[in-house]
Image (cartoon, rainbow, N blue to C red; front, side):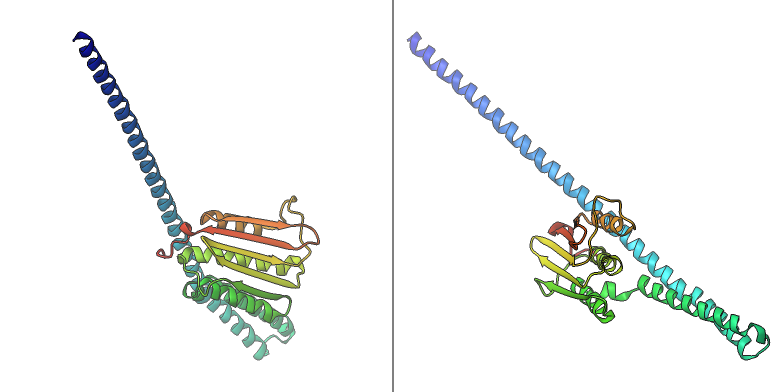
Length: 264
């Protein structure tokens, strides 16, 4: 009898230990799952917070550029226009015939400066950038390059439109635009090709057939630094490959989670 009771006691004790161990394992597993979920939620909150900060910064920058553009157009532009009119009055009135040539030259310089300021104003205060989607903006940029007759630009897309936040679209467009302008200014290229793909996010590959450059050397201008800084702002990766005589290729990849079409 005592042997049977001892056996039952041992069995029960083992069951209790097994239940305790199993409960401990379940508790630890659930704790780790909850902790991982909590960490993921914290990471998501941080990413959303950073994205909101970036969008706020971009909105402020956009408003500031629009304000500067309006001020250039309304204030500085008008004053320069008055200066040109006064200069022309001096010439037309023939009050100082010995200064006519110099006054005319000054008037031409002021006119050229005025036109440059107007172009800058249109660039800073550009409604097309907010009204059109990315593909329309890139198509327009290619048409402008082709109209200049310096280089042949082409655009290849995988979708009729690519929805994304206005602030993200603005930065992506400026990156590609910077690459195209650098190619036209420095690469002596004959062809520019932009390929846009939407698959688990956005992938843009821009290539030129220009003279290329040595990427191990410090860049001569601020264009490359601007592109990298802008890519970092929206959480994109940017790679630039080039070598002397082999052209240049830019690859921009933006995860789908960073496109956030609901944001403005």
